Image (cartoon, rainbow, N blue to C red; front, side, top):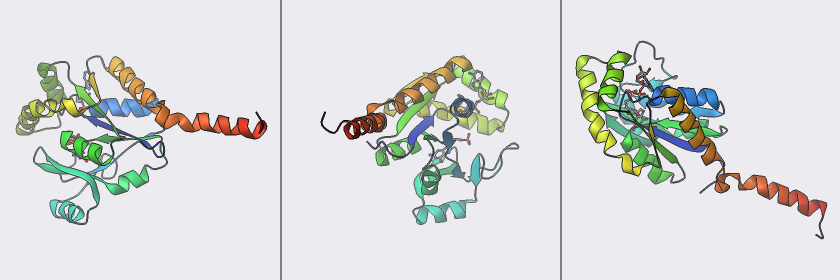
Length: 210
Ligand code: ADP
Ligand code: 5GP
């Protein structure tokens, strides 16, 4: 595992469980983290801007990027294509950590290429609450909402490949847990050994004989 470069943080969940809300709050608490901005063929929602939430592209452009090998991972989700470009990793090189909001297919692909990535799965407290949140967000058509709700079971079925499971019931508690996971991961010996080695090197040069 490399201690160089940003901590790679994969966050997945069934649609509507709260990963966008939670990761936005995580970034407020740890501003040194950055988001990976994915490409998608999904049309933008009213509040979304290209280059901020996503790079919105048409299907032929997305397929061209796939053919050129520009993606770290990509997948079809809810009838649209989504992908993380390699360029996002390069852009995040100087950050402490980079957050990937991807589905379970993307999580698996990132993990297989970068086993040092940590993968966090967000669960809703219940399916009723998940439906309520999806409906309350008011971003989907009735069909889109059903499509996402039906996909929730399949998404949750892949929980076994994630390192951490987090139930997003009380929002404040869930954010605290997410922050705790990231801070603990940053403190892993493999990622923090440099601090100890610098002290040892300083001591060696101060007392070369002892
Ligand atoms: P996702 O990114 O996983 O699709 P969102 O972050 O968009 O989900 O959240 C879906 C909806 O649920 C939003 O309207 C959001 O405000 C709401 N929400 C998120 N977390 C909670 C929570 N802990 N309690 C109540 N509502 C929440
Ligand atoms: P939404 O349309 O609600 O923004 O996202 C729908 C689903 O697509 C979510 O599960 C989200 O995590 C996933 N997603 C977003 N970006 C990517 C990506 O780059 N790759 C993959 N594999 N999934 C993504």
